[in-house]
Amino acid sequence: MSARASNLARLPKGMRDVPASEVRLIESLLGNVRRVYDLYGFEPLDTPTFEYSDSLGKFLPDQDRPNEGVFSFKMEEDAWVSLRYDLTAPLARYVALESQALAKPYRRYQSGYVYRNEKPGPGRFCQFMQFDADTVGTEDLAADAEACMVMADALEACGIPRGGYLVKVNNRKILDGALDAAGLRLDDAINGQARRLTILRAIDKFDKFGVEGVAQLLGKGRRDESGDFTRGADLSGKEIDLIFSFVNVGSGNRRQLLDRISPLVETSAVGREGLAELDNIDSILTGCGFGSDRICIETSIVRGLEYYTGPVFEADLQIEALGGNADVPRFGSVGSGGRYDDLVARFTGQKVPATGSSIGVSRLIAAFEAIKGASPARNGPVVVLVMDRDKKQAYMQMTQALRNAGIRAEMYLGSSGMKAQLKYADRRNSPLAIIQGTDERQNGEVKIKNLIEGARAADSIADNKTWRQNNVAQISVTETKLVETVREMLATIDQDSTQA
Image (cartoon, rainbow, N blue to C red):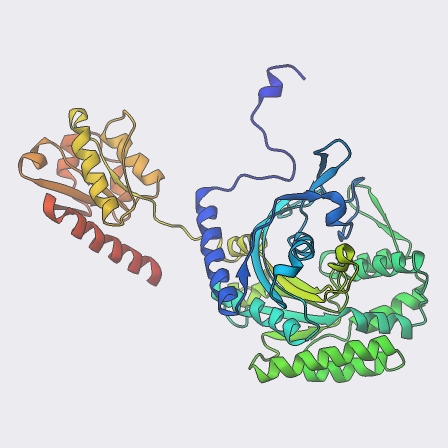
């Protein structure tokens, strides 16, 4: 590559720039979720973007890269660090370090970007944002029930209507019981666990690959469109059918699903234990008024992360219910979680039970775009036009008066004429433009142009004479009424936007 070519502006694969409209939507969603997490009594925490690699562990659901899905580099002579792949492993490290100072159970929430060194694809990036809420230090299944409840409430707070999402619950122990009942011996500490994890990760791919793809992953393996081959669990056809008979039990009414699962695991002690845990969670959810229309049981939910030890959760959007279009495919998961009783023990040597759930903020943003066609637009700043270059100080004072009143405003800082300034304001998505020429200044007045109503007319404005002849969505007020009038006009614009 030539020196000149190497200076081309380009993005690393799997990364993306986030424009202002999306940044603001992210901030809005984070605020909505944060209010719910606060309501449930969780406290904020922030941890570093990267950790020592051995602190993160090797628990990723996809291991199709040589460094097993993480971005790593040497920070010290003999110490490797990695960008965090989720917010749970750093939490386990934090709890291990601060255990003596923390009130138990410890309840925290955290938002931030996480990083996966995975193959990028449509809607799949190497950097994405999550927002977690976890309870560490209790075996009480009320914490697992709360993890589901807080996900449901958070999605509704973000604007997903009831009926537009489902939080789905299962239990790893029930699946282990089904595998045991099916005669699959996975007792070997190394090979058995590796095979079990392969089975779990295959089942977790139902939404992505369908029945045929999962059957291949449970069997000899699957080759994707790029030619890459993923080795399977090497199960027989009969064993695959037995697993399918379990995961196809379905979803829906929790009580009915528990009754249908029971015969499939009644010969397995671990299966019966998992069933009892789900029964306990169901009782808590029912008592708190969370019906199966919000939180249901689904046996195909297993989650791909290795560290889950019991109940697992997944929040799915039902995009047909949101868009009213049955031809639009279901968007899928925008949240997940589960119980991980052994993760902190890696550092302390003592069992520290924990559970939690995570909202995939980046996934939720993508879902809003798929549902609504585009991210909700937000009005930009009020723009004060500069009509007379020698009066910039007066224009800046006008701008500052708006800011002092809590109104987002800016003075045009370029060197273009009026038409270009109005086009600039349009591109900034500005709702209003403030205009004061010599005549207005002499009369102690300003013009306020509603750019939302007058957007089409802006292109026809070539000069001051044309502007004076064009009064579309434009009013004149005294300088002393500027702030008050702008505030009233913005309130009307916001109201019209909400009704639309």
